[in-house]
Image 1 (spheres, helix red, strand yellow):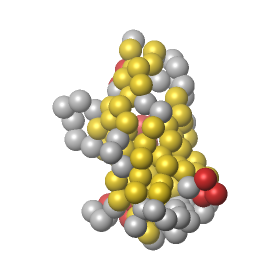
Image 2 (tube, rainbow, N blue to C red; image 1 turned 30 degrees about the vertical axis):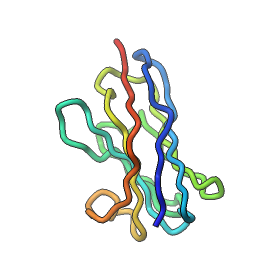
Image 3 (spheres, rainbow, N blue to C red; image 1 turned 135 degrees about the horizontal axis):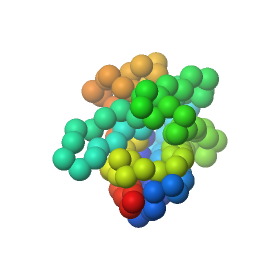
Image 4 (cartoon, helix red, strand yellow; image 1 turned 60 degrees about the vertical axis):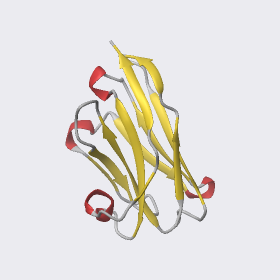
Length: 124
């Protein structure tokens, strides 16, 4: 199965925009549904959104709709997360995940492949 490595995190100001990347190795992501999760300090990891293997379907957690965008480039074996107009509440470690099969598996199935996470800190 693939291995995932996130990048693009750092210290940003409220109002900035950010793009995180999740690069896969060890295989092609063509058959994997993928997604993003985040874990804020002192809180449990939460689902942010998912994308189907062919990008036809993208789902977002309700509170982030309109401010986050998930995309993928299968030719580059990479998943992306864009966050527009960052807020302090976006401070978290962001994780990408992948699983073969339907997009719904990303959010609910325990047998996902995880990246190691990238920290995003938003200063207000």
